[in-house]
Length: 83
Image 1: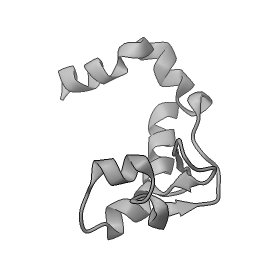
Image 2: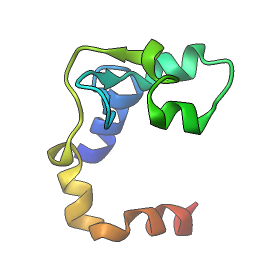
Image 3: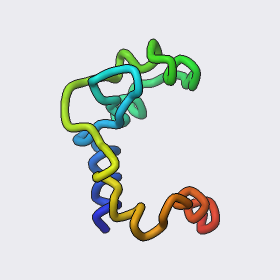
Image 4: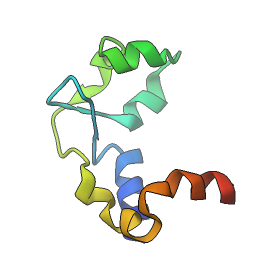
């Protein structure tokens, strides 16, 4: 349940996703609500992420520690299996 609460915070824009190039966090809610196209290369390199960067709390490993404890490093396999 703690992990689902963290995911809800990320989707609500209250908790930002880290970006490897910037100290600011990536606002996933703003991206989903306003982006008209997705270019993963531009998002990863940084220029596509600029409009969605903002200051605030950024998710880290501790944010998802409970999911890591339950599922280990193969959590993505569980997600694909059950969906």
